[in-house]
Image (cartoon, rainbow over all chains, first blue to last red; front, side, top):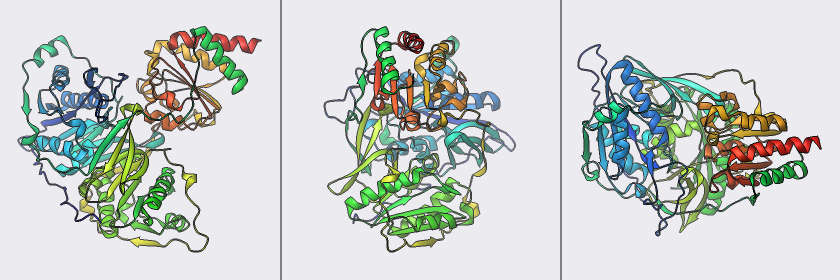
Length: 283
Length: 330
């Protein structure tokens, strides 16, 4: 068997409730954790070591669900007042995504500068983010429900566990009610559920829940003067042996034999019509 | 440590993905030469326990508490944490349901483990579990090896394992279903769940359609929808869509196919401008024949397609509509 279990992580990073400065006052502080990922539909090449992808060929953008988390935060701020702080772990290039978030209306940012994201397990990255977030005493932490690159869908949920705060995953709508938050959770097959919980709380936001705003020219100009605090990961969490290791990445084996129809659009259309007529017989 | 524990989902009825996870558990338990165990949490588990008694399990656990009647992350994490400490399994598996996505990552973190989420296959390497996951919307696969000292936690993608592959139980004994009563206080549960509800009555039953034309991001804007609507009309097909189309309000939510929408298995599914994100594929990969039209030859939709066309949908689809009409007139 494999030896003793490591100590539990529950509530290892205390998060003080820092709501407002007096009774009845609602000044929201919202952290939005965002990730920079390869642009959707990029063509991907595996790197020489077979551990990650060639990044120099790629363009990067904000992870789509994180863009909706940022939008949700900005809407809450517009309604209730307060501050939106962007939290991002990533290499130098992530600075572009941070500036775009500031241009859209976030007030300031924390950039955990690190080049090792692809080699980290969720626990390690969540610990860095949670430690940086704990120092902020935020009322709400929002992030996208999953990343478009790794797609594990758990960094936010694990952050909540480490901070010892309640959470809800896959959130469609957020309402602030005094010291608590009420959220509409998406369930399977078109079902939903409202869940209320006290703040501070962490929510992972579903894509598509509202229209995303564009940065205005004024916003872009103002973003240049906003604070971006850079920290090194060593200041946040000591390295720990991973519980899970990504060994290699590779192209999936095609399980199905796909018959590709080729030619001009008219030729392809004619071939497909033959398939519909004579093979699957729906015409 | 001993056994492969599969955590199933029951809410009056079983979440069907539970049996897929159990099938995966059976596979890895056999490879590890370990007993297969299962657990389910709730307040009313009589029906669940009766079902579990008929399954090919070494043992099952009915984790019963009044505070587990409605799902809350706090309640379920506390209950399963106690069960896992008592059972001390080598591997803990879950179906990758929306509920599991809400609590399993925290549960794994309590044991100092990262959940290997949304895995599509499971095997062994030097005696340790290795799970395959998809990256970048299915463009790449990755092998994740469990190297931690605690149990290996993993959740399994919908449709990745076949529930009907679950071996029949041995004819003689029924599996023992043990009662497990966790210690939970009401004060531990910080969230208050409301009733589950559906937004509107579903008037479109895509699951009954034999022919579906489905449209995705490739259509670019709402004004372009007639391109696919005309094809659907010509074929007498139901029109469906991937999530972003419904999120934008271009088509009603009830026409959405995928994990958050409807699951369909028509005779023919024509995917137009759909790249094939995992969340979409789980809703349609059971279709008898899949036809994909996409400009990106590396789009994951081609992984599941029987017939593929790489091309500009704005050229191909109108040509197809015309060819279909011509064939019908012939």
